[in-house]
Image (tube, rainbow, N blue to C red; front, side):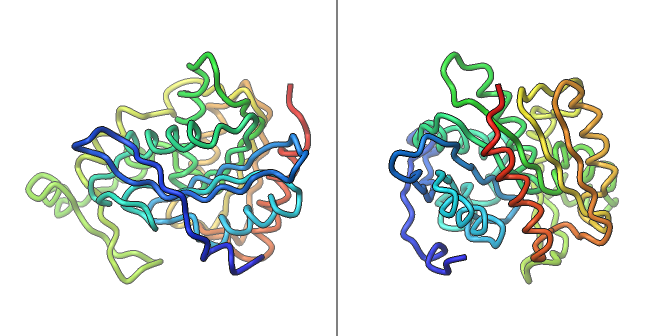
Amino acid sequence: MSEALANLEPTFVAVGNAGDQRQIALQLRAARKGAKGTTFMWLSGYRSDMSGTKALELDALAERLGLGCIRFDYSGHGQSGGVFTEGTISRWLEEALAVVDYAKPKRIVLVGSSMGGWIALRLIQELRRRKKAPVIQGLVLIAPAPDFTIELIEPNLSDVERKSLAERGYFEEPSEYSPEPNIFTRALIEDGRANRVLRGIIETGCPVHILQGMQDEDVPFAHSLKLVEHLPADDVVLTLVRDGDHRLSRPQDIERILTAAETLALHKHP
């Protein structure tokens, strides 16, 4: 993997109306000249960005295969503008759609990590409503966290956290991955209810490969099993990694992720 990938100057796309406009940073890798293949699109997790190991490895895979790759940072993340605490699923979904509109890929394999898996599922729902949209050729979900605000946060709130949400509009919890605490806002939680996907059949219209660590303390592997139940119409492969954690960033984990992405990219789905 080229270290230079992380240091490239991004392109910026303006998203939102004048009073709520934010500059979204993205990195576009064009397919090799003459290639008519698929474009990968990376969707990061909560507080993650497009310069993480998995995102850069996906970009490097695209380079090796001569395919395109789209990476971007949600508002309040990475190199994008905007305020993190104003972020919601709807807001970050709007940005993902704007990036698709800007890049105009013909066929895409979406690769969503953690919260990015939720946004990937919502992105597909929105694209399927359009008359003209890219063909979704495949979906790779890494420790997916659809509906995590409803399913994983709300039922486990302590009295102190509920009080903080009511009085301050947010609560904090320590992060394993950063010295800064995770912040979850009331707006994020309320907006999450409007973006639920685990309510009925989710139709992606494409093959799905889910990779889930069984030692994941953030998203229990039972959550991925539940997601599979909501995907009865699709060709779904679920890989449970017995000793895998939430990040799935070890070399052997990365290899599994890239193999799944490459398989979906190179095998055309009707």
